[in-house]
Length: 276
Image (tube, rainbow, N blue to C red; front, side, top):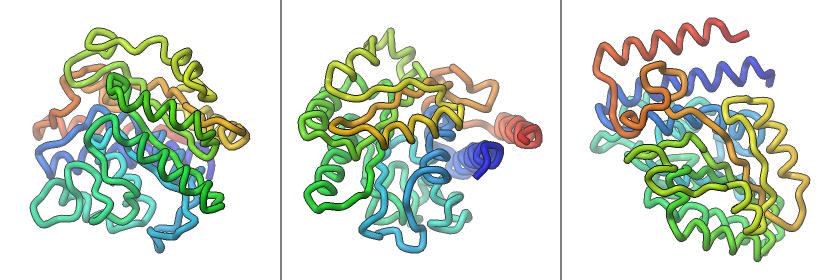
């Protein structure tokens, strides 16, 4: 798929995120919008999956460690064809499929139920280790938030992944610099992240998290690494694509009113028209 087509997919995912949150009247726009290119690169450029067989044993796996960003995962899954797009408008509604955080029992394509920050990478480790023990060639991908770096279990999982030489595991860090309480460096600094992950035994890469070509190159390099997992630190913008949301921690878990929603969709649609 061409770069322009992938950028259009990411834009569509962003528009669907806004529409979902309008319908739900609750949810997390900032960290969902920041990860659109990452999910696009995985589901439309890299991962070996089959929407018609969500439980295919040999599929690649994905764990959304920052489970509150479920809208970006749901939008990507619907765009890929796991379920009709109409389901997106049922986000967070009683009796509907898409809960506020991913649920592997109810949603086709969700490989792990997540939401409690810090636990996702451990689950991804387990999937990757199982693949090795079973002699499978599938790969496991995970997406962590930078605020999540304050969770101790992340670093336990980091040690375990290196100890077991999980070279079939690649994780992304959505480095948008903000969490619910403000800038991550103010709330609980985790810098220097590159040096820390490297010291924990990972192969570490840094990319522009909104650049499809850089993301694709990092994913390709990760597959060549032997004997250690890969961490791809992706510099992103929280609220990416919506001018009044960008780099504003207030949009971590706040949704637009009617006027703001109209403006957000207008901006994204104008961006889509300029992609080519």
